[in-house]
Length: 385
Image (tube, rainbow, N blue to C red; front, top):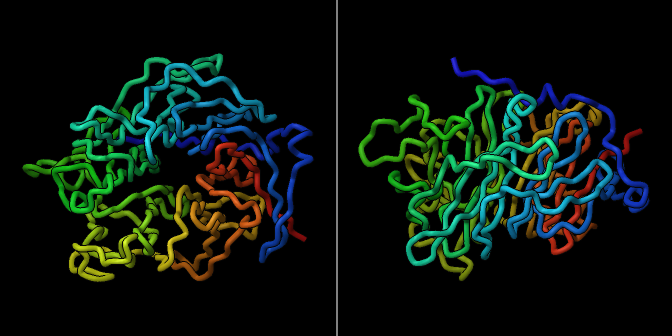
């Protein structure tokens, strides 16, 4: 039976990650429905940061920067030089170095997983790739980096790469892949555009994937009909995989990803083209044989990274989902009854910054990245009575 330990046990410490006094002095307080929120800079000077991961035992953070750098950030906010051993990325448009996650067995194997835009396609086009390397003991680089997944064919001229990574409870790796702004490919099962795929950590395809053995179908596919999925997270209570994705002009979605299901794009959408014309392939907001969004925004916030909150530090946030928003420049909090969204709150709009990623830290705080030339890693907490 293929079972792997989760990283959560290794990250269960509740002590605060230390912050430099200079950055702590820059803390800002903002209103919220549940008490004021404090946002404290942990690190500044990041070049369009895209994702972060927490090293165990309060060692600090790994942060990806879109132009192609992986940085170590010390607990007190010092940035390393770019780590060595990181693959060359195709840094154009929305392409570059994207997500970063640690192996569920990181304390034993020290493996770091990266997703990124990779060139080499016909006509100079690019696609998403995923690889892994071993973090050196001195934190100076990745060793023996190997590609484990390539999006084929490569069709992007600079748009819609996805791409988020998440491990489920059984240690399978899920990867979101954008449709490269080539809408019909999201419905083509011989391509990896507009898909969520499920693989073993070394890139092998599980025999029980839904399309294994079908002629002309990519066996990595777990679900399809996705547009540009930039959020992915394991629901810690149900064990289900949740995804979010950009709609076109309107129609950003949150979906609960199920085996073999079609999530509709471009046959079903709540959005229209940026030209204000309808999506040519769309049959309406719903289409036969497709799964309707679990939650949808008619006006797009431009959603990105997301994280469920299951920490003990802030009781009012328990069982909430937090999602970064690029266009509306906010942190979105979704509140549930069961799996049903019953309330939404917009936070941190006063920062006036594109929020690219959000993660729950081992200390129970939220950590967010702002996608700017001078990007910031913030620690976010709720001040409760």
